[in-house]
Amino acid sequence: MPYGYAGKLLFVDLTSGAITEEAPDETLYRKWIGGAGLGAKVIMERTEAGIDPFGPYNMLAFLTGPLTATGVYGGGRYMVATKSPLTNSWVDSSSGGYFGPELKAAGYDAIFFSGAAPKPTCLVIDDGKARLIDGGSLWGKDTYETDDALQAELGEPGTWKIACVGPSGEQKSLLAGIVNEKGRLAARSGVGAVMGSKNLKALAVRGTKRARLPVADKEGLKAAQKLFLAGIQASEFHQGLTAAGTGGGTDFLLSIGDCPVDNWRTSGSDALPECSKLNSGNMDVYKLRPYGCSTCPIRCGALIKIPDGPFASQDELHRPEYETIAALGPLCRNDNPEAVIRANEICNRTGLDTMGVGNSVAFAMECWEQGLIGPEDTGGLELKWGDPNAIVALVQQMADREGLGALLADGSKAAAEKIGKESEQYAMTIGGRAIPYHDPRMAPSEGAFFIGDATPAQHMGPQGMAVLENGAPIGDDPLLQPGETVEFFGDYDKKGDIYARGAAYGQLLTSTGMCALYVQFYSPPIVELIRPVTGWDMDYEEGLETGRRILTLRQAFNVREGVKPGDFKFPKRFETPLAVGPGTGQQVDFETLRDHYFVAMGWDSATGEPSKQTVKSLGIEDALVG
Image 1 (tube, helix red, strand yellow):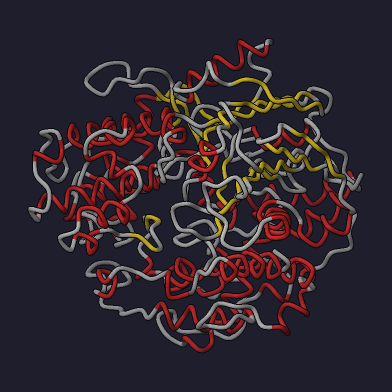
Image 2 (cartoon, helix red, strand yellow; image 1 turned 90 degrees about the vertical axis):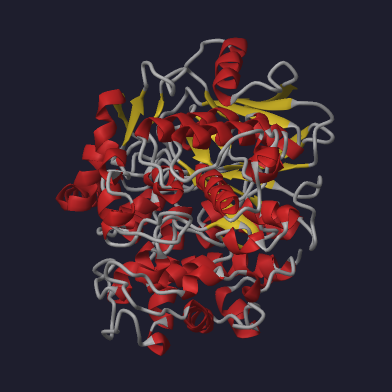
């Protein structure tokens, strides 16, 4: 068994009920690492072109990485990968908490589901023993109820880690995610809808025999971890995360034009003067206790509960993250924190992506303002900007898939196609996926990645690109230096290599199972951590090549599925420069920036296809057989 890995992959054919194991050669792990890399390798090889996202031949993968369950700080993530029914492209969606480490401790680096069960089904893994059980009694239950019921059914409640879909996944809402630990979500691109289409209600895993997997060099890892922790503790950004979570500076992001208001029409403090009420630090009045993902010293989460009032919580829940706050707050001109918390709880219970939900609500509010929909469409709701009651009620409609919510539950792009009346101009998506709530007009690399990654509108991935673009290094190695100084809003032709190296670094990091937030204002020594865990003599030349290899195979998947670069583009609203903050007046040509990134990656800028030379140099000919 290779160090840092469980050494086994689990394959579950839900149609036949067959469960098989494979023990890959160590060379496969070194070449593809884990996470999205391992997922892309297996899915590309074992599926055919043109697969229906909801069909039995689409694969759904749950994936860990070599740093998961090894004690490495921040290595608590797991990834879900599949073909997205929302964008019809590649998707890998990440979640934190403790499910990923538990899966690996239970004996598997990844699970690949194919087929579709004839009736609701659950997979149970108990210390390397996997079985399918009937899930009929759980169908229709929300994610809290499912977790509690399955824990009780399996015995020794609290010893199991559960990942499941709620009613939204069962109904195949294109905004449905997969929920673990009652509020940690692999949320985006409809991964929960794929799980629901397979009649797979839940996964329950337990690995009681080993809390941590063996590593190759314990003393070497201790030394690397010591330096890593010192860097984390010295970072003011990470200190802020510990104090107040990712939403601690929501009003600051608004003030600099980064956080959108009124469905991306405006920003700045004057657009929402009371925005500071939404800062997650101000939610401490509802705080029960802090929360952190497995092996993370930052502990940026918290469990909260609203005790009473119109938006009272049913149970304790996870404090909203920044993207949720922005989506259900400023984007809808809402400054009521209790409404944001309640809407977030509805999404967590039913299994919905809050980013997509907020996008759909803001879209509906603008359609209402423009007279494209009325009370006859909303069940009598008046969708006025900033109305907290209307926001919560519409989110509930989406969760119940009733009324206007039945349209919005598949995202604003799909809703606009049915509403018509030129409403598509108000759907703020890229390829059908909600644009993350950091304005790319003040971060060129971010915008290039939003339309340049195989998963559109992907906000966890461009961090390394942004650090290099700002003229800062992402590590000590010469390959991690920014190189030639570039003008932040210019020098497009000089940015391709910067973007390629930054994206490769980010892809390597997330494929190991580490949280991408660690790259914000501090870059983890990722290769220095991989070496003592695995025993490999990896350097940054190999590490960045590995990141490029994974990015390239994800891109090749899209090419195979007929997705072209031009399919991912910003709405026309983003052609208007920002009027506040450091991006004021700047016109950013994101498509040209993407083209330079593609050239640096060795991909055709028109078709997206990796060149034969690129395929050969990265050694991925054997993977392009689907």
